[in-house]
Image (cartoon, rainbow, N blue to C red; front, side, top):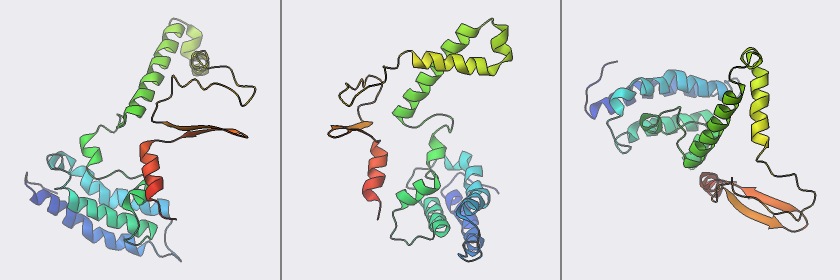
Length: 208
């Protein structure tokens, strides 16, 4: 593969990917074909790998300019799941756990892309750091990783509230993001409804 720093690179990669949709379609024979996990692996290995390889060149283009590659992936997703074009592509993409084409180009895959995940990662990192400081200099901790894991769990348990004995309890939401706790319902039972905005959007757009 060779590239030029122009919009032709997007169409060049698209033209390389399009012929590989044919064997993917042949593998989806519902009688003798491959399973969905195998088809997903085939897509990532044979088609998506071209796009990822071209990422250093494609990173200069906007999401609109990368639209031709997004359409290739959308077609592959519909082939894998056997869904018509009327199906919501956001739901299908979530079903296969595939990111949009431009997502990996602008985000470090090791860094969470949402504020909630970044906050959770920061909390976990601080707990592990505290556990490592407490076990520093202990030969037992260096030899036995189970000891380190037990120490981390002990640190996590300290700020936890006492388990409730009845339905009439007060929810301590200091460590819960406001947008994550959707409802606190108390009737014959106590229901706590948790969901992110993205999950609610997917549920709203899902076809039953």
